[in-house]
Length: 636
Image 1: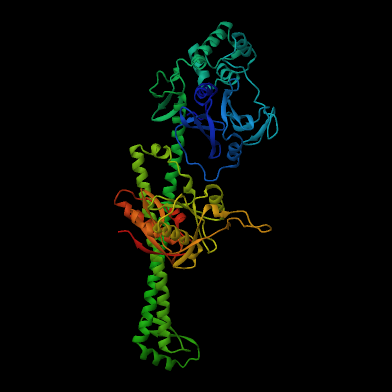
Image 2: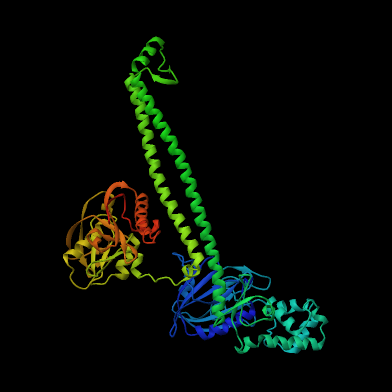
């Protein structure tokens, strides 16, 4: 099975990339996994294009999207800094080697992004003089060194078979100590598959020593190389395809080869080699992702089953101990006179004595009355009852998690059976709006309201996203979010109350159990980060000048489903939600337990509509207010 692109493959890929990417603008750079980076490009005639580069393996345009990490890597950030906004002005393959360079005209001048697709591959950013600015990884070789500020040197070059003359091939053969196929694969850089193709078409025994070839045979080999590489040099006769043997994708090729001509191999043809390479490698990535997902599902199910077994054992233990303690307490009351008589006859000065009854031996504390002894056993029974009830709640939660994990596993099996997994795992993701990194909702009047999550996002909202005519809302309590309403005119009293309720609900007032809070409204132009002379403003704090409008609002939030997505809105806006859970401040459930309850509710509601697993624990947790809460109401 092919693991990486050969020099021949790269030559075809580069030809196609030159047609597709020259003039494209670099918008973003992501690092996906350990070795792969993706360039998000914009081409005037095509729109958005993703170019994937995997060090040591491949380079091609991809139509599949993979989820980018929330925090970009240092290397991705450096590439964004230097290449962001630049345009691709050139793409070339170094001679016939597995090295590709993208020339980018950036604000710093012309820079080069070099992708080494050799074993122990690398990705490097170089300046116009060829000096290395940033390597993906530092490396040392006998003939070169890859590190910052060093001049980039490519590996020692080999003969380019597309420019090589017959005389040059004869010289290589005469001085080679390898057999023919290895000479073609290594000395000329054709790679094993294409070297074997040349031998087969030239009718040359691949195991013969290259130095033993006659002049006529060398000429035949040279002619055959030109014939094999003609589609690469001219672009004519290309038939990009994937080869499938025994149901497994084994190769991706730019044109047909003799080795698969007489076999039972199935071929899937594509309009471009980029498309074929993308499908070939992406399918394997999808398979590895799905295998990892399956293992994760199985391990989650096994973990929940183990926890459930331990919880049920603990439940049986607590039930037995509770029943035993209660039985002893009742027995002391029922046989009070008999036990009292036994104690009188014992005449013992010990504090704890054993009293033997038919089928039972009791420990009695002689320092207190028998009634107190019975009460002690009842208190023990109550303690075990509380533990039993705690375990019962934990069992219910574990069973819900187990059920969810099993449903997800079954849903995956159905998707695999229908062939939906690749489509599901590798489709274009919906682009998120800029405000979705904050807390937000839209009022019934259609006004976007955005709130910060901490000092950093508060600062970002005011500095980057607040306009002078926006409405700025804030509470007097510490640890409160900045809330901004994107509006140019006056808002109705209902909208102002909803915004105020949103602001006070996400403040520390919730954590301290208040049921009402006060906040103020000002225009964006009244808010400044410039303190009076000689004073300092902490991060996330602001100076507000001019008249303020104060408004009180009850604390109350609803977590619900609107247009198929999970949102948090003030209680005043709950009527617009399809499903919701209404929350109020209370010292009942911590955030983790509350999230479990909410997930259980939504998934139970969605089960009947075939939407099991419609929300996740992390999604709910990110929307919850600070501190503990109580579920006040649920939608019918």
